[in-house]
Image 1 (cartoon, rainbow, N blue to C red):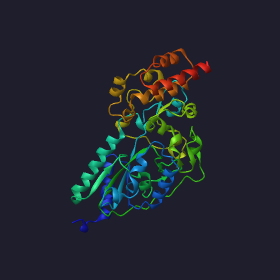
Image 2 (cartoon, helix red, strand yellow):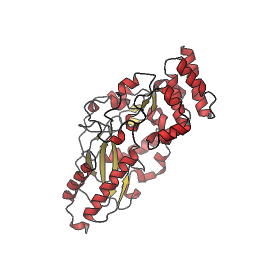
Image 3 (cartoon, rainbow, N blue to C red):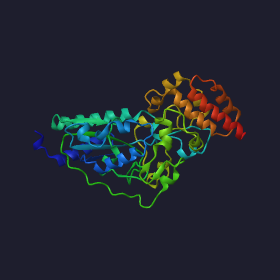
Length: 354
């Protein structure tokens, strides 16, 4: 049945259906990832993945889509902008050490749910048009090389900060994929436009980029505040500033993001004032409050213990004040050794500064 399809027309239809579902654009690629596989193996060999053992456990399934989902011959990549248009300016929050900085992608609803729902609807539209076909939807939820795949399409190129860049949209967007058994004609890949610019690399507070296109996750603030489960290395804590969940510095520094349009979905609008809330206020949340307010948020998965760990570091980087010291003292006997250790560090740092 699929042998009689006009696949060129189908791709045009898929792009149109994608726009109707809120995606900014759709890219089509094949499944060849030999170069990306070699780069991944070198990266893993260096230990740059840190505690993210899942990066190595899936073997070749990560870089060979046909092994992860047998029958896959094409990948449909979708781009969904997220930058919240009504959020407090990122620079202003970063420059106010009393405030908590949360990566702008995480201010609203969990993107996994938003993206997955739309991708499932897109797959259903395709199936309604062509009949049943082999497929599987991914939203950063399985071993998928999403940037390497998208960089083979019209969606953009891989920037030196390792994220996908688009000339008209910068990098403030999510990517999602549909692995498909349909032999869709692939895009011509977008040309790269980073040139000699190193703004993203130079902006990293912890110097996590060991070279262009190479990130040592063990030094990355996003990794440290989200993926890392143990104590944050003492030598990196002062560089973290007030960043309590993720980090946007490399994107904020990128010239291609200066004119990037904000996302249009209300799902990504800030919740609970997280775009410009004080560290002291967030540090006072008990576990019940944290779980209730973070329901439906990507932040919830780090748990209350790591939430407090991250905020304790940020409080230790804030100017000493009676309010800050009182907030830390209130947690100095917390049941968690992880929390207590970071609180002790923060108190000592503030007392030395005061």
